[in-house]
Image (cartoon, rainbow, N blue to C red):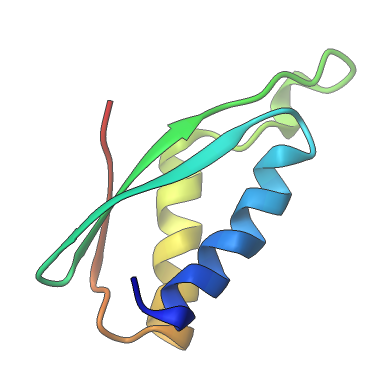
Length: 77
């Protein structure tokens, strides 16, 4: 995995990890980054946990800025 991709994923792992969530790299197939997301739980603010759809979009935006090889982010089960 490219260092730029790893750096972006590390940043997002810190974000989702604050609520006990986890983000895992699965594969980079062409320009599609595949990730597995396990949302955490925030009992005091349920809407503060990043939704899978929002996470995919945010990761894609960051990748477009820092790791231009990625043009698609897919969350896989």
